[in-house]
Length: 105
Image (cartoon, rainbow, N blue to C red; front, top):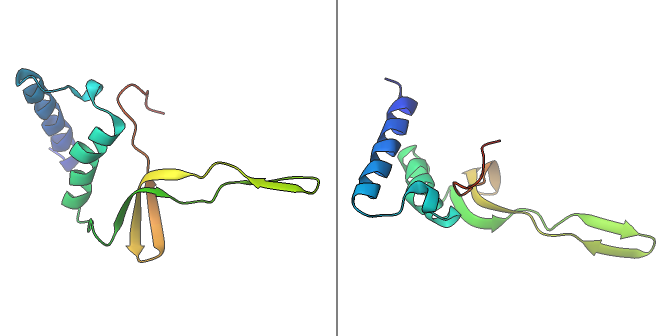
């Protein structure tokens, strides 16, 4: 059995146990709950240092610049749930979490 297959089975078993104990199922969890319960532990198990290589809930752009004639303004800032860093100031990945009410894709 591959590492990914065992992770999927473990996730399924955890969800079943949570339901039997009266805890919320994965479909009832918010995006933040999913980050805390599933993504952060998976990143630390994969060897990422939570203090030096991972930043949570961070903006990574100042927003698109719109120019109309002599008027200039910025659009909305882009935010990510997680940014993974190879070294300080060298980001290599952005992770965007979704709650279970969204379809994959």
